[in-house]
Amino acid sequence: MRKPAKLDSITAGGAILARLRSVGVDYIFANSGTDFPPIIEGLAEAAARQIPLPKAIVIPHEHAAMGMAHGYFLATGRPQAVMAHTNVGLANCAIGAINAATEHVPILLFSGRTPVMEQGRFGARTVPIGWGQEMRDQTALVREATKWDYELKFPEQALDIIDRAYAIAASTPKGPVYVSLPREVLCEQCPADDLNAKSRIAPATLAPDPDAIERAAAALAKAKRPLIIAQRGAGSAEGFALLADLAERWGIPVCQYWAIQLAIATDHPMSVGTDPQPWLGEADTILALDSLAPWSPSIHHPAPGCTVIHAGPDPLYSRFPVRNFKADICLPGETAEVIACLARALAPREGTQKKTIADRQVRIAKQTKSLRQKALAEAEKGGSGPLMTKSYVGLCLSRAIEGRAATVLSELGAPLEPFTLRAHGSWYQEPHSGGLGWSFPCALGMQLAQPDRLIVATMGDGSYMFANPVACHQIAEALELPVLIVILNNREWGAVRQSVLGVYPDGYAARANEMPLTSLAPSPDFTKVAAASRAWTARVERAADLPKVLADAVMQVTVARRHALVEVAVAP
Ligand SMILES: Cc1ncc(C[n+]2csc(CCOP(=O)(O)OP(=O)(O)O)c2C)c(N)n1
Ligand SMILES: [Mg+2]
Image (cartoon, rainbow, N blue to C red; front, side):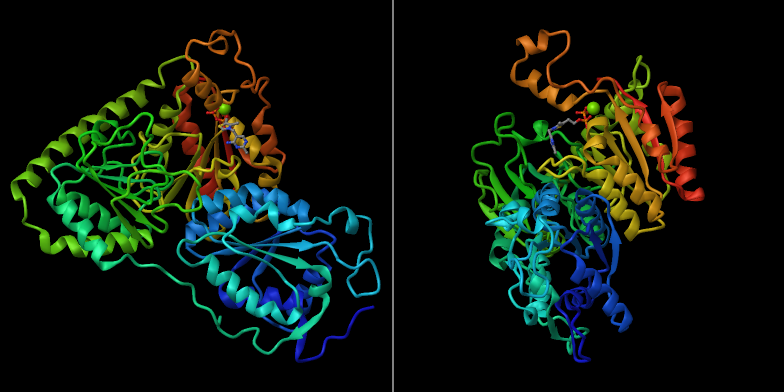
């Protein structure tokens, strides 16, 4: 059956893999199936012919593969590939695709497509799933969460399609793309001449309209009470430094409301924490920096005449049907670039309103200091009750990682307030799409990209279970990724309970002994799940024990380079 490979040709499966390397993909996070013979054969063929390839690694759950690609991108800025098995593997990728789309994380997602032909063609159906996995529209499983999709029709398209997929994923706004790969097409030969050539298609990056930048700078320069709300960080280390400088120079408070990434040091004099309430109502100019939902219209009310500027890769977040925040000026572009444009446009305006700005700097720095002291004191107090609070765990964790190059991920885990974090890339929270089970695999992807960095993922007990923890621990051991997992176990879906209390504060559910559909009792012993993959583990019930356990865990992951799990009993 096997077709001999001509010297100047390669199977389409092999061509796709080799081309991924040429466009800059380091890893293929793969979960294979019966649609994979041409992929696996392609890997072996390319390796035998010494064609450079990305590293293809086995990831035992597709959700973890997507999370790892997500984390790898956050750590490096480089899109990676995920390959899954037909419609069923793709279905397991769907939450990861939704998360990636919401956070503008590019991923090249592939899955096989069950053979079209029942017989008579190389690669045709051989087993009953060839029929059982066919769908009228397999791509529909992820189409809404992808920027672009395509089904490979002919083998000679292989190289062009990879170039196009990569370029679209990496264009502003970035996001996942999907290509379905029918088995018969992958099995066919295609030309092998240009496998290592540079991509023929460059990503398109957006820059804001200079006139809009001028208007935004003018509005910020003349504002009496400006406010910046930042949800997805400052884009890069340079953007982070520029934003800190801009906020300080102009005396602009920066609020990190439901922040997904850190935009400003938590102890910066203009960093006013995570609650926009005290600032929003009095603001006359708001810069919403890459913020999907910069405030909650049912709670927060900007002043009626306030000028609102939205900046970021997609300032109007056009993927979402309903999002009606006032937008007087829109500044599309990669966040760090927009900050740089604004800083340049603001520079010549310096010196205007000198006294107002000086007063503002002093007033905000004073308020910030007192807000921060209050938050830290509150967190410290969280260690004095019968069960620790999440804030107390955050405070202890912040101390445990102090002085290290570290990244903290939080998925209903420790909150941002008690941390002292001062660097771009030091904090990530679960995507606003809320597809839980994100932080564990994301941490694994980050650790893969940055072997020497301390990566800590803190998450709720529910979030841990959503992550397919057995698969994630297997990956940590197999790939030697010494992440530190800290589970904040309240034995419930606390966020769901809080949500019920928010809508029906005095309802039947609030008064019930146990609120329906929120309990996770009896809680498994999570340390045993981790121990099954030979992780270092500890359980902590008493607040006084936590600092020492976290210090030991940090030593385990950084010195012994063994992945570790700490389970902390926290208050509901
Ligand atoms: C995949 C997925 N399923 C369900 C939900 C709904 N959901 C939102 S928060 C939450 C509870 C999370 O529990 P846990 O991680 O233990 O944190 P806690 O709320 O207890 O602090 C659930 C189930 C979701 N966001 N994503
Ligand atoms: Mg919980």
